[in-house]
Length: 376
Ligand code: NVA
Image (cartoon, rainbow, N blue to C red):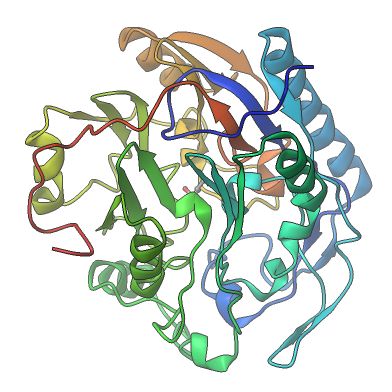
C-alpha cells in the first residue's frame, strides 16, 4: 500500500483515496428540534425510530461493498469507518437524545480542504458523536502523512437556543418554500452549525449552502479558519428541505456544474459563475417518482454522483436519464446500483469522503463578483 497522502481541493480532480461508509447498526433517530423540520410530512419515517431492519442493513452494505470494489479495481485506495453501536443514547450537559444515526454518509461529517480533514459542527443532536467512526482512520492518516491536519470545528452545544421552537408546527410546503427563500430556517444563528455536505469545494472558493443544516455563523467561522479561501453563501429557494448541496449543485469538471432544475441558483448568485465562464446546466430528471422506503432524501439523489476525474463519473445504475446526460456532457459513466443504500444517508457522493485527489488549489474564479462572499 502506498503511503498516505491527504489532499483534496475540489470535487473532480483524479480521485486516488477515499472513505466509503458502512451501514452497520444505523438507526432512525427519534425526533429532535433539528430533525422534525427535515422529515417530509408525507414520509413513511414520521414518528418511527430505532435500529433499521437487519435485512435492509445487509442490502445496503452489499451495495456499499460493491462501490468500494469498483473503486479499488480502478486503483483507488478505499478505507472504511468503524461503526459504533448507534442505538446508544447521547447525554451532554445541554441535551439528551434516545439514539444516534450511523456512518453511511462520511461526506456529511468530514470536510477535506487541502491537507486538512475537518469534522463538522453538525446541527443534529443524534449526530453529535458520529465523527468517532472516523477516529481510527484520522489517527492513521496523522501517523502516515506528516503534513496532515486533523481538525475539529467548535463542538456545538445544541441547546434549545440553537433551534426555533415550534417553528415548523403546522407548516405547509408553500410556507416552507417562502421561508427557505427568505433564508429563515429552523436552526438559529446562536452558534456555528454546518454539515460538511453543504460545502462545494472549488479550489480557492468554497460555496456553502445556507439552509436547514448550515448557518451564516458557520460560514464566518469557515472563512476565519480558511483565510486563504473565499467563502460564499449560496441558497436554492426552490428546495423546501434544503439539506446538503450535492443533490442540487454538482460540479463535474472545471467550468461545468449540473443544477437541480427545481432548485435553480438565483440569478444574482450566478454572476460569479458567468463572470468566470462556468456553465451551469439543468440536471436531467430522476428516473424514479419516489425515493426508496424509509429514505430521508428526495428522488434527486439521481444527481448525487461521484466524479472520479474530469472524464469519469459513477452514477446510480437505474438513473438512465442522468447517465445519458453525463454521456452527452462528454463523461464516461460507470453505473453502480445504490438505491438500497439511499435510506442510510444518501447517494454515491454522500457515501464517500475524499482523502486524496491529485491536483492543487486552483483559482477558478479570478473575477470575483459582489453578492455571495461572506467577506467583501
Ligand atoms: N437533501 C437532498 C439530498 C442531498 C444529498 C435531497 O433530498 O434532495
